[in-house]
Length: 258
Ligand SMILES: *Cc1c(COP(=O)(O)O)cnc(C)c1O
Image 1 (cartoon, rainbow, N blue to C red):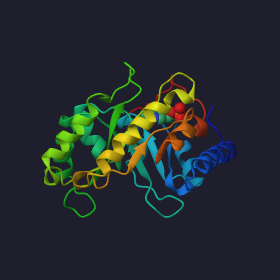
Image 2 (cartoon, rainbow, N blue to C red):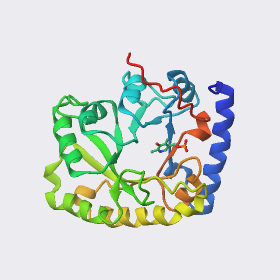
Image 3 (cartoon, rainbow, N blue to C red):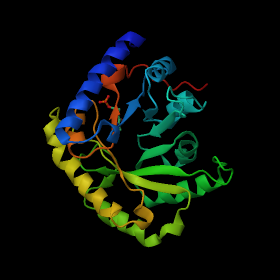
């Protein structure tokens, strides 16, 4: 059963209390952490409820599900346009669709994907009619788990250095915004601290280089189970599903073609 609007409001208040407390402990302002509402496996009505509660940013794992819910532009309560973040791995043949529906893709992990996205975005109309500018983050498998996708933790730095060597003119339609990781799935939030700290040090190192990394100021880390630790370690975008929408029912995928 999906939450009612009132239930969701209560869950949001509880989550906000967690975020505020973590920000306080970390000596950070609440504004420095963006909440991305992970709506995967929840229907369009849940998205509408979230928007009514002030949500501006949504995360989806699968491109088809993102298209279903976010192809139609929507206005958030604050008057901004609702943004869609693609946070799951995207197959090469789905990159174009991802670039169309997403404002930001968090899960890029190969030079091939970067090259393809640049071509695809150059050919999209975008807001000016002269190509779409897409924000991307690079996913690092900082938890070093076999089942997780992303750049190998030992290769991430070389990968970023390679991008840098290609120069600022190589990717005029892409904005490299930062790094993303999924913490360790041990059920103990503290276990993810080290990989979050590693991500931050790598992100800071490349942000300091400027050039193609001039906008590299984002760290997408922290989910329902480990968002406090992520905020303490510098997260700027937490991706939260369960704490807002409740448990996902994986037997009911929201991917029927429209
Ligand atoms: C599903 C998912 C989330 C949200 O996880 P919760 O534990 O439900 O908050 C965050 N990030 C990614 C990449 C996901 O796939």
